[in-house]
Image (cartoon, rainbow, N blue to C red; front, side):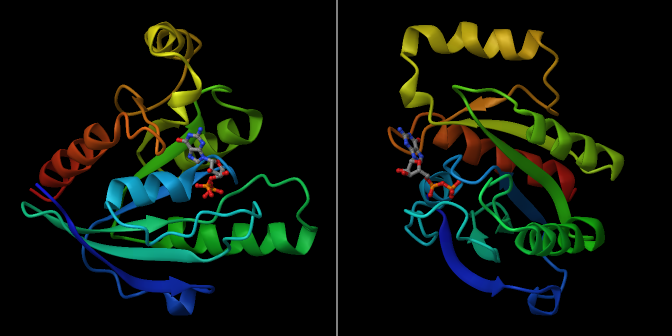
Length: 198
Ligand code: GDP
């Protein structure tokens, strides 16, 4: 079933977050991981700006989703780990992100995006540790799967899982480019929300 989506808020500071209300699923990942592309593919709409200059998105973007069976907010968090950022910018990133993640009662799930070619890099593991310490559940969504041939995807996923990857469910292998895994991600979100709000 198609989703009805709209932009609800673009927040550069926590005062601009909309009030807690509908359950929220947040999208987090390194800059350039393909987050905007995947957000657009999942929303079925080109609302998120796909960056030609990595690390430009510093806002928290709230999208309102009417998925038919459930309504929720998809929350696009700023990308992290962009090497050329100044210390001030990194601090601003962590303040905005932590003020969202730590204080948001409506946050029910974090989708942790990681490039399928690279698996989890040290700052991805740092994010997972940080989320775990705060008791926030997360599922891994791999991105840019189109860069790996179809025949190799299953064994690569198994390798990552064997290497001790953390995720509340089997990671979903996606590509915003060829749309693989996108409907799976949408279905996962809907089912998760239906269970979470029961
Ligand atoms: P973000 O910084 O994480 O929001 O990443 P973007 O969505 O802006 O994408 C960063 C770059 O990766 C852009 O050049 C995109 O065209 C490219 N990209 C994003 N998703 C995919 C994908 O699924 N497959 C491939 N091959 N490239 C992608």
